Amino acid sequence: MEYRNLGRSGLMISEVTYGNWLTHGELVDREQAVACIRTARTTAV
Image (cartoon, one colour):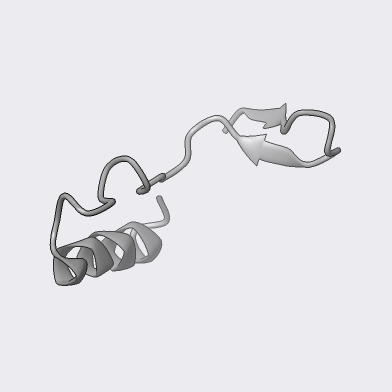
């Protein structure tokens, strides 16, 4: 996995992440969003 600096914070983060603010927001039901996050966590996304 490749990592990059997060701005000038000194933190290194992976290039691939799971973001859900734009993906989920209010576009899907809470239950669906939670299911997506749980699946991502259990599959090490």
